[in-house]
Structure formats: C-alpha cells, structure tokens
Image 1 (cartoon, rainbow, N blue to C red):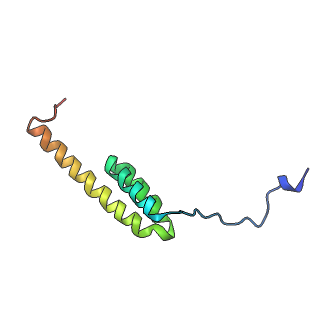
Image 2: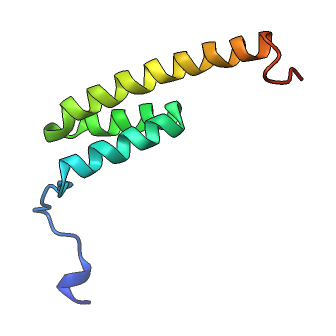
Length: 86
C-alpha cells in the first residue's frame, strides 16, 4: 500500500477564493430578484466568507425586501382581478 493512499495528519484548511467580488455581487443580485428564497440562501453563504460579509448583508436585505414586496404585490393583483384566484 502506498503512503499516498493514507490520510495525512497535517491537513491544510481549504479556503474558497472568489476571483471577482463585483461579479459575485451582480450574480447574487440577479438570483435574489428571480427568487428571494434563493437570494437569502446565497446571502447566508456569502456571509460565511470573511471578505464577502458586506455583500452578503446587502443581498440578504435586498432578498428580504423583494420577497415581502412580491407577496404584497401578488395579493394586491389578485384582489383587483389582474391575477386569477384558484
């Protein structure tokens, strides 16, 4: 048996490196606008990264506000007859 197959005792801590914070911010904004629940999940993942906490907080707030607004907008549209009520 080779020594390469055995687990090492000095395992290094693996860290995710995000290449472009601006790219991740706009991707998260797009995801949050499409689905507020997915936006919250992505925001929590970004909050766990040390360099992306501010971005995660912005996305979390945006997702929460957009989710509440879409619920109110949907109920208003249903009450006025613009959306069908099943």
